[in-house]
Amino acid sequence: MTETGEERDTLFRNLTITTMRAEIAKGAAFFSNLHWRLRLAVDVANPVITGDDAVIVEGKAPTLEAALTDGGTLILFPLCRHACLVGSPAKFEVETEAFQAFDLKRLQALYLRGRCRFSYSPKRLAL
Image (cartoon, rainbow, N blue to C red):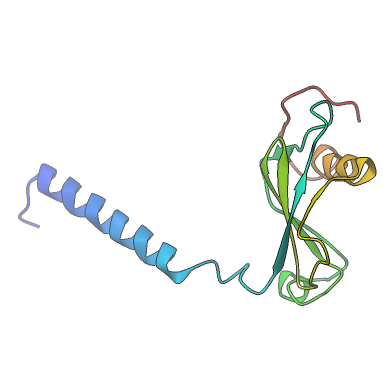
C-alpha cells in the first residue's frame, strides 16, 4: 500500500461505513416474518427491565430456526423502561396494550434469574 497512514484511516473508515450501510439495506430478515405488539408498563414502580442479552426468546422450540415458526414462541425486545416489543410467528389480536402485572413480573424474572450477567433497571427490584 502506498497510501499514507491518514489515507489508510480514511479508506478503512469509508469501507466500514459502506459495509454498515449494506447491512442496514438488507433489512431485518431475522424478524421480518414475525408479528409484533407493543406492551407498555404504565406503573412507574414496576418498570420494563433488560440485561446484557437484551433479546429473549421464550418458548419450547429446540432451535432458533424452529422458534421462528412456532406459534408458542415469544421474542421479547425491551425498548425502554416503559415499553417492550413482543414478537411471535402467531398473529396478535391486540397490537398495543398495557402489561398485566404478572406478565411484567415474569419478564423481570427472565432477566433477573436468567443467563444474563447484568440486568438493567431504573429501580431496585426484589426477586
